[in-house]
Length: 577
Image (cartoon, rainbow, N blue to C red; front, side, top):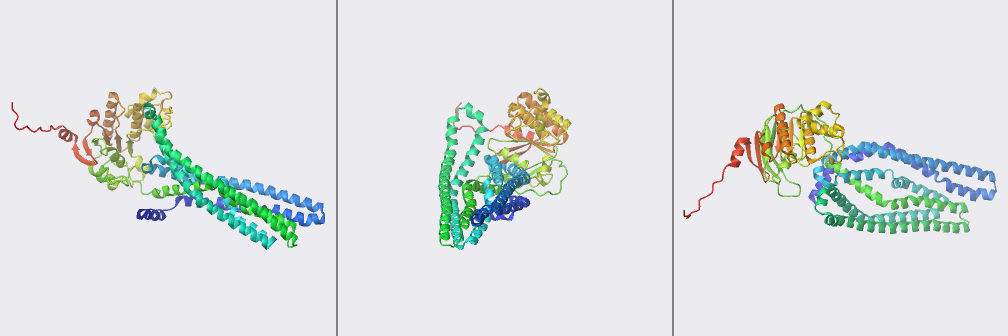
């Protein structure tokens, strides 16, 4: 409970970016509200027309008056239709402006926060689109019309106090029914949304591993697991839809009944000579218009709840991942890397992955990190490049903490090849130059350093070849070498390579060793995680990680000598020759 209160208080202290974006669209909303006022005033033309026809035209028999009233009514309805169309266009432009204003920030926050949100990454962007599209839907029109319902009730009061009191009571009953609808529909709808998010996340993960699924015949078992959250989603959706349909039918029944009952009340007042026939029919039409927004809101309640939940999730995402303030741009680092008492534990777990790791390497040195599986090598690599924040300690590049460095500035001086290589669905050249306005010479230079230039030229369109989603058209070795070219592009000061030879053959190992040698000659600091002797042979220092602890660190020859030192076997007492 205390952590939840702390989280809420932290969110409140940070700027609410999505609300600020909505405030930036305030002009659009004000314009839409003004149009709504005009639209709802023009809706009074129908009741006024009926009132005049029954009370004046019929009694006077004036055809000219009837003609002029009819023309005025048609002009009012034409203006109403035009204003309604313009209001819809204004709200559509609001949605576009909102997207331009906040969508890049949402995407940036998802990228920066991807290590915590896992498989739900694309769902957060869908959440933003859900909220954005609600701004242009029918539900928002009903919300703009709802504040004008009291105007219609006030006009009914002007026709007769009894009619006004009935209209006011009817409005209160429907508002209470709307709150009741919220109370009974929200729980299953929220549970359905949570199950849907889990299902979408599992679907994304499954689709990334289709080769494994098909190769080992896992489809049946996978579908069984996949259906678990989907069945829950459908079950709660059915419950929410059934409840919402029942409430919507009840509210429609009440609205139609109230419109008819006010006619009966008006007829009684006409019989008692307390009002006119025109007022009776006008009151029925006005009451229908006053209650219509409430019915529309209840009808679109599911979309409203979804938009509200999406708004909250996007706001929390932006709050926990605030934009970094642009500060002083530091000069190009020389490449001096120091790791100071670095520790890291996944939130909610007690066992740390890294524990007090400390070492330092000078510019131009090559460090090899080795250790058994699960020792924390890849986690250390992610901390070195600053994509994960440590629980304690720091990683410094030329004395500056990489986690506080401006990412756009630091990225120019870093090269990173992760263990799981995925290329982007674009050209080979775009992948190598990191989607910057690349210098062709720099792209080719990086490809030559990775010894992949000749291989790229043999592709169908050379450097302009579309690699497909995740680099699907390329082999693992191709992807790894292009990923290496991307890492060395732009002459970075620090290059971190996580298992860069996992998909390479002997020729690829030699090319990788040659690339590391070239980086070293340039004065680039290189950190490499590998178990291949050909790769470890070019490093200057070795760090041995075991269970998250730096067990050994020092020059390569010294560490290799300690690792290969024979273990003495104790003699067995009492053995006979």
